Image (cartoon, rainbow, N blue to C red; front, side, top):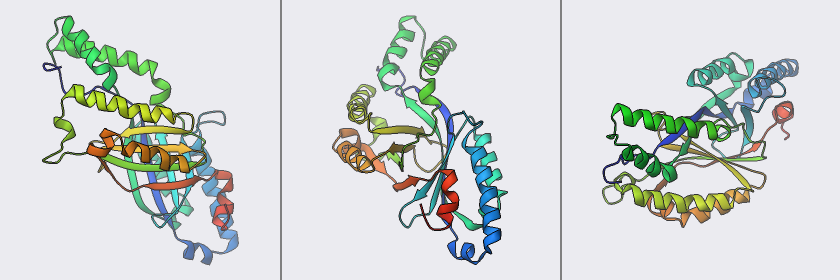
Length: 276
């Protein structure tokens, strides 16, 4: 790999927006009951429209009731473009319920599949054909390989929001310090570590759904991680085990963790009345 690019190939899919809100309960309680009902009904209609493109379509927007002091509600949106995500922000801002929502945090990213396992083979195949790295012929060969992989991986690149009961979200980086810098580690060594790292996640595949999204150039961290499960303790077990893995133990930096319960849109009125 000495003469090949040090950057692993990636596949990109859905654009993703996470929104974290604090709810103004004091103002809500001061609102007349008839007005609260009108606002709730209208907000439910907007959210149902955002949830699915049609009744039988996959879920593309999900609402969660957040635990802890960081906020009250989380909205997760998967869309085909950043423009579509921006339209969601505008649509929500037009609702009367939005007057009671204080956006405390957000995260913008794009679903990403890293190809550490296949990048070496793709680069070597292009070199075997006599193509110089980054030449037009090389770029065309790489683009064709990525296109084939994108078609094969389409369900993972454009996922529906899983219908699991619990959500755990956190952003993360790879270290770039003076002593430890992930981006200066040789490609083959990074490939080995990522392979071992992935083996841990695959062992939990039947209990937790993980969706990784890249945010380089889009938000403050390099990746966002969504974990969906029906048992929240699985989040603790998975993340704890991964802390012993070399990739995490040596090179990972983590941001804040957010945990929440799925809030079906038809239960919004109950939630606004103080019950799940």
